[in-house]
Image (cartoon, rainbow, N blue to C red; front, side, top):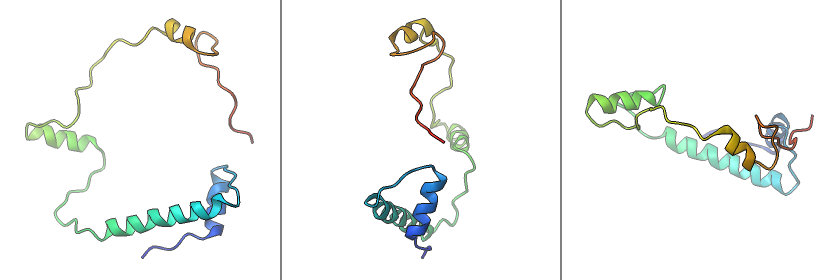
Length: 106
């Protein structure tokens, strides 16, 4: 059984993530985080004997190709959408980049 997340933990994580949680959100977040940890505990109970660990998804692709069933689509160069056309459709742009409102205050 994993350690349970307390209100102090939720408050600290919210602080680190620069989030402001309301009094109603804090217990919900605590419940959600504990549910995630409970699920991880369930996953840890699975017998993975004989299952090779993966470091990257590309290893699955290589395995699939080795047995004749590739698991990912081919990585092919394709033409992009014209930048000028996209910028003309944007609510605000400087012609090269989208302009968006500031969302993080520090």
